[in-house]
Image (cartoon, rainbow, N blue to C red):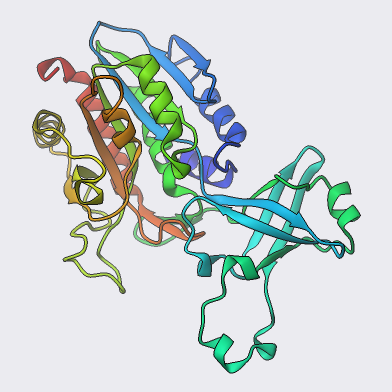
Length: 345
């Protein structure tokens, strides 16, 4: 699981440009499912045939990133954030463009602190005042390297393993969910039909989940994603009771009910499965943020949908952190839930 998470995290796939992640997902699932197809939106749908009862596992492939909007005559690149960035985390990061001509690296710069006016020093630097410097001396050099208006960049970070079986890297939101989905599909011995879906463009509006769920119309669905713990400085347990290493989260409500309110039957299915197999879990009632589950649950006449999450610190940054014990427990929970699905649906 560590190797799989590292492989997925180190790869690159901004919303709408998930090609590299999709190829890894396809490679990992081939030989473990009966069919793999790519739909019009770019969602990867892997099908494990079974009974008329069906479960959709949804894990989004995209990560937040940057898109080129302007290149000036000196070769400096202005960009727009793609997805929900806290803009201050971008400053002085290294980025990489994956172009048809190869990888192009750059750094995010801004006005030097030595030249900031006193009032400027008191204010956070906005993304509009940042730029990407790839070392070019002209607009022509940037374009010759393969970077043009509309090119996308991701943060240039790789996975590092910490103490206590914890891991840090970029894009754990949602490469963690993908790793769990892959592992569970490989291990499960369910009699139900399983649709393992790598969805696109979750970070910019849950788009791939909407279209894929509409086409599949499963009996039930589980979105696999990250969740926000309250076990570090700067946040209190009253804001989130989740902790790293205490097991995956099972969502009750997210976005204070504006997202999903999970049905009692889905909650019963997931919690009773965890308890029957002595899998640790944590219930999550969240004020902010939502997942593909919201879009899936509202598809057609409605699809019963739950969320299994990995408590992850510092999400939407380049140093996201999770505990591998939660990853293995989440995979076990999904595997066993698939195997007893007929008791509930």
